[in-house]
Image (cartoon, rainbow, N blue to C red; front, side):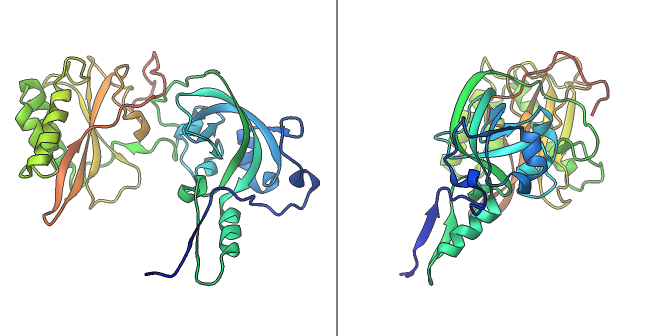
Length: 323
């Protein structure tokens, strides 16, 4: 038995109550109107203050603009460090879709919250913070009240706007494992065109010699070949692109292969991994090729399908400057 208690802190005020406004209740009447960009651009100036922010919400964040999705964070693990995004905590559930949200809450800092939780631990106890700061760092809002407005779907971006924008790249042909991704994606496409469910299942099963793995992969293969599948319009000559996350090392295997569902996807390919969602509105359909750890058998390259979730609206026009 490990004689230690684990303390779960769902939300502690990160700032010491130095100002009167930090000691008072945080309500829409007492709040200061602010923007995501103002808070994310200078968190220390806002930490501890009660604010009301109106912006587009999605997941567990507020976004100043669509660029808040695509601009990369300056600090690892700190989404707000891109200057256009702010975390949310004390939500009953993550935000579905892309509604306009008016949120009243207190600006907090994850590092200060962690320090407060750790300081409260007694000798021999392990302190662990839950909620937003369990996964992320940086500035966030401890939500006291939120009002959901109309949907404000942003259009996805299709053009890289300088360095630090969009986390996907077609990368270099010198990547040692590109040939394997090309090989696997070609085999996948051939199996789709031939409607070869068994071949698809073997490509998608973590361990094709395991009966349970293979049966689950057969069900996934049936979806790929289904009447409503985004892959059904593909042909052997369909345009294709291999995309990797920026900064990925040369040794690992984790990449996307996207196939064009229309005559030409120039200027329409995804520039961010969250747009690899295989929504029916996309002009492309993608697979992920990655190493999978098979118990007692080591790594095996496996084809996986991105999960379909609510995504940014498909733009009507292709990008002026293609990826």
